[in-house]
Structure formats: structure tokens, C-alpha cells
Amino acid sequence: QLQLVESGGGLVQPGGSLRLSCAASGFTLDYYAIGWFRQAPGKEREGVSCISSSDGSTYYADSVKGMFTISRDNAKNTVYRQMKSLKPEDAAVYYCAGEWTGRLCPRPRYLEVWGQGTLVTVSS
Image (tube, rainbow, N blue to C red; front, side, top):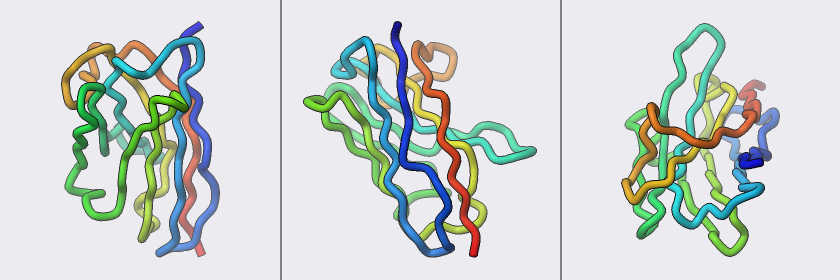
């Protein structure tokens, strides 16, 4: 069974940092572009960053640029996202998802694997 498993979410104070992990199970991530998405209560799902399979190129939405860093370690079959300077509006369930592609970002219509999500709460 192909699946992604997120971890690393939790409660953090405003201005704090977290590192989320997205580990592949049942397949290798080498040829998958991986995207991180988030969904806050009452809001639509938002794609915030992604990393290509081919050369590790990255993309960040304007809302997280400068605060989030995405990276991948294919030897560990894992993609990471380091988040810093978190704000209350960053609170959401964060998901990773992937598509077998050489593109920079996976295409929402063609996502093949999803994680179950990890909750990030930003509150004092």
C-alpha cells in the first residue's frame, strides 16, 4: 500500500518553529514531486510549497516565503518542511502529497499519494 506519513505537528507559540516530516511507505519517493498543503478550519485547502523529484527545485507560496523551507532526503525516503516565525494564521492541518512526475510541483488533479495530515496549532 502506497502511503505518506506526516509527523512533527503540534502546539507552538507565535514566532516559534516546527519541522514536519513526510515519509513514504511502500514506495520510493525518488521520482515523486512532493507538495505540502494546508487547510485551516473554514478555509479551502492551500498549496504552500513543493519540491521536484529531478533536481530538488523548490516553490513557495507568497504566504510562506521566507518562513518555510522544504527539503528531501531520498536516502531516508522523506521530505521535510522546516517552519519558522510561525503566526496564528499558519495554524492548520498540513498534508503532503505526491505525483510521479519530473515537474516542479505535483498537479492537484494528478496526486497519487496523500498523507493523513498533521495538526499545527500556533497559540500562546
